[in-house]
Figure (cartoon, rainbow over the protein chains, first blue to last red):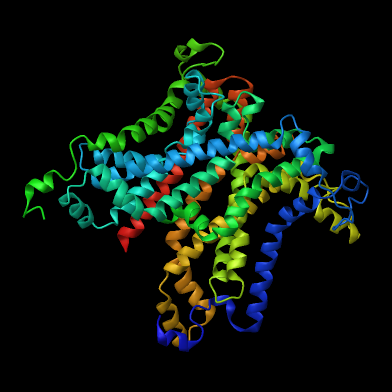
Length: 293
Length: 302
């Protein structure tokens, strides 16, 4: 696929792209898909800035209402059981704990499984691979029993517990370290470098792409996690954003949709801002388990 | 290297290094993944109640399992989950494959489309379910407004009708996972040797024939992975039901995991909840195992 291919002028035109009709159909289908996906999101944005009296008027305010308000956003910080920023800080702390812990410990374990020879290495690796297919729902009841009986309910550590180390992270890291030439280790050893230094000074920096993937994957999972925080959190002031938004949504209080949507919008905004700038890393990070696994 | 300086080779990593590297991670994996996974079997043989701390030793034998056999709601929750999978899987998988094929062309704006398709993947189920609930609201939602202005009248309450509630929940799931599958398929398409396609084109093979004989077979391994991931995803569905319908109307959207949640955290019947979890886990392992077996056999045959 070099110089020659470029002369052929249609290097990767697929089956549907032939001719003008094909182009129209392609764009038509893709646009319908994009509209269906963006529609609910844009509708949320539109409704958040629409005053209540318009939102609940008989016409619903039309597609683009004439009045504009920031009251719903303000309400999110004043009118709830707890203001938005309390939940935001909770989510932030839990997410940071999960990401940092996952990056450090999955990295260490992945390196050990790829490089250090020890009795039972094969067995540990097989167990890690087997755990990949097991979702949290398969173990949530005993995990809840263990965590709550160890007094971890209602603590940030307890909320982050299932995401402190993940078999997926360990597995990805192991696969990546396996591709690094062993000569690098040998050279460092000859220079008198300990395994610990070798890992932090040489291997860890090389692994930046997979570390980024693990960090992004954990960030999204922790920020959006719902079922585990729902069962482990006992008090209102420890709730993370999904639990808080979920509790409001479950009630379906007809007159509080404005605030609920403001909460929803505010809670996805940080994620979407990151996503906007790091699209490729997000796609690689979130699908890495599927593509490499 | 080893031949030249065996002493160095042996000392490559110190004897206790492995503890520094693996100690904490393995401890956590055991405590958070392995013990709870095996613990499900234990708890399912008891009638554990969190209000009675000693009840984790109160064995009841296979009582929870025999109760399941006669529990219509349990069977309905399995049926509901399967119905959800049936609504969700074809569009989420086949639709995403088509989208990926369309996006794999030289196309202006293909990265923008890809970026939009993938966006819901980073949005939580909670927020996604909430915004779609509002979007489909009969009096305040966009489709309802459009339908009314075209003279068709407002949309019905989709989530309050047994026949439309599950399709609406499935729509949320498709909305959320369509882009995920699309991106995986795009990676799969890029792995197909484009020289093969070019050669066929030079030989005068039609677009349809090339699609059928080159693209589709090339996508088989990716499809195996996508089908497995999405089937498991469907079996563990919980969030959108919890947010949108609470399992209603008339239990028509009570998924298996939602039923487990009700049993354990509403009724405090952790033993029974664990028994259902065990059955669900066997189904999930079976899906993973089947795909693994199928996948391995294929790669051996080649």
